[in-house]
Length: 338
Image 1 (tube, rainbow, N blue to C red):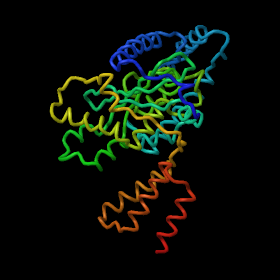
Image 2: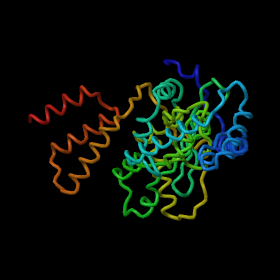
Image 3: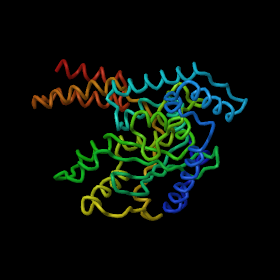
Image 4: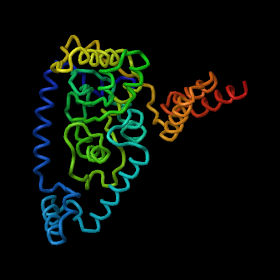
């Protein structure tokens, strides 16, 4: 990993060119997927009466070919149980309609995190749109011939930002770590994770109705390597992306009806972040929840002591993977015995 350019493509094209190309390609792929007779619309089939459900399942099996295992009604019930369990998990963790960058990383597969760390190192904010949407461009690995990928992120606190009295640094920090919806144009997201995002209510743009019966029937993981890189970068709010986010808010605070803005090839250099080789650690979801509840409770009392503030900060640093558990325990021990 010392020589990144050996395994990744460089972003040389104008942002407008890549965005238009990707948008057109996505529209074609989404139309083809919607018409695919091998796609398993689980919710639709389960709503049908038995004879019609059996006929629909037979058509799916016929069109997916003999290379794949033929599905049965028992498979459908098992898939439905997976969906119910996933919804219950999202509800229990209060992930409904939006999800934070840290939670996305925490729920991602280790293999996707590893691929992100090894292959995806550049993030650029390339297009600002209304309704809180920023399109980011990442580099692509050289494995499949792609030159780039587009990750679209909708910031769900955008309306609050438009009406806020002042956009402070603390506000921007919280905004960039706040709840989002997202999408990526890559196949990994389309065939593995978009269905999960749809179930969780945090899919941006096209919703996925086809259950990933072949690639991800266990409904594990959450994000591809491109999404992970964007979310990891947002959670650490580097100056390049911070400026783009600030510009985005300021643009629509001035006029909510502004047209979308795509950065030029020269402008985008100001909104480019190149990641280092530092390992991406999965945030501790339980710790995030516990620290969040602690802060909310103390905020109600308006009585946070200096020590409590320090403990809360340590907790967030641990949850974000910025310090190890050993570091956390050593530092908290010192605080408690002061």
